Image (tube, rainbow, N blue to C red; front, side):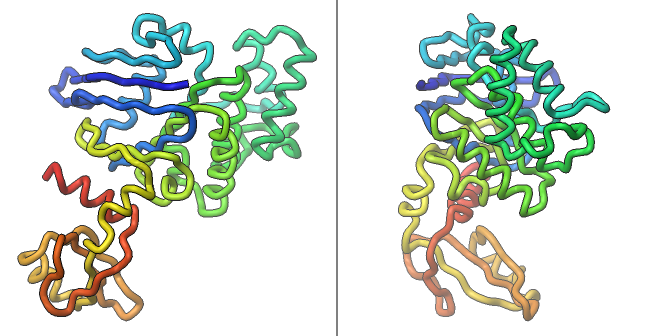
Length: 291
């Protein structure tokens, strides 16, 4: 179930170029779309989900020309936006039954089987009689996955699903998404590096409407092996270090000092130590490539 995106561009009326000639190829599994807020990720996801049209370009999914035949894609699409509303005073089971009818599942017994399946896979079966509006943020996101699975989608698009979730809810949600991604093509948008690291088969770094790099997390880290250097400094020394080096990240330590990291092909001045690279380093290096 490959998806092929070619020369996709979108400029809004205010002159903002949200998508800048995006090209991307991916097959079955999970693709993590990683970029800061304002990178164009949500515009990209809405375009893939046929909710808005680009100015130019093409999208092909499993032999479907998405821009010419959006209704064909919607038959096999599952979409979870950043935010979605729910009806008040309606249980999870009742709301899923309603959504299943809207998706064309006319047989009551068939609806019952698929609803039980999606509730179980999202760990919501025990709370199926409770009103969805009373769910926690993480439970609502898992309910979002449950509703998109009703039509057994081949392509699943999930936009910033862990924003605002506490660590426990986030881990539960990512576990569900990992299960769902085994047999489907999933495109998962986030600005949280940790969401991508152990979850996605491939990662696509995006900023300012452009795809900066598409690779696997393992390959991305291997490419900068031996090229990340770190040292501890006092807070007052940061400005001086920034004037000499292109610092890719800095973090506070328990003693109120800072650990700064740089990317360099060769060993730098005294005091810098080679450290194991992280996916976060690749992310910051990619973002700096446009500055």
